[in-house]
Amino acid sequence: MFEDLGVKKQVFRQLDEIAKPGAILASNTSTLNLDKIAAYTKHPGDVIGMHFFSPAEVMKLLEVVRGEKTEKDMLATVMQLSKRIRKTAVVASVCDGLIGNRMIEQYIRQALFMLDEGALPP
Image 1 (tube, rainbow, N blue to C red):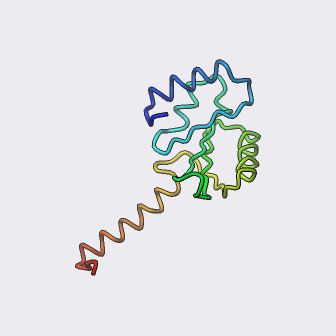
Image 2: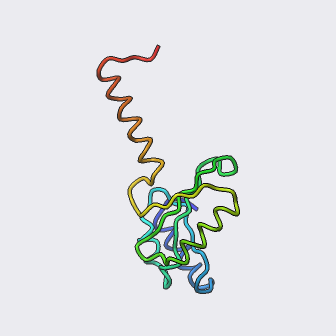
Image 3: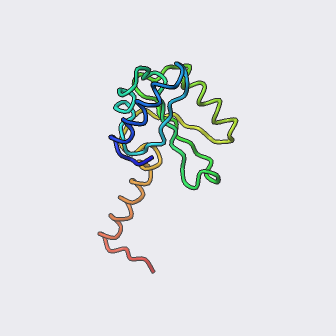
C-alpha cells in the first residue's frame, strides 16, 4: 500500500477488526512513524515494522522495527520468521529513515563534502 498515513490508518483499522489478537500486523513502511500506525488499532502490541529492501527476493537484509508498544513475543515471532524466510534481520526502534537510509545518508554527506572541496569524478 502507499506510504500515506491516511491509507495505512484505513487498512490497519480494517485489519484490526478481522485479525485475531496476536496476529502479526506488519507494515513495510520506511517513512511513516510505526507508533502512529499502531495507534489506529486496538492491539498496538501486535504492530511491527518489517522493512524489506528492494528487490526483496534478492536482498537479505530485513529491518524489523519495534514500536513503543510492540510486544516482546511479537518481536520474537518476527525474528524467527525472518530466519525461516532466509533474511538477516536487524532490530531498530522507530526513527527517521531506518537503519539503511541513515547509513547511506552518511556516505552521501561525505561525497558532497568531497565535491565541495574540489574532488571531481574522473
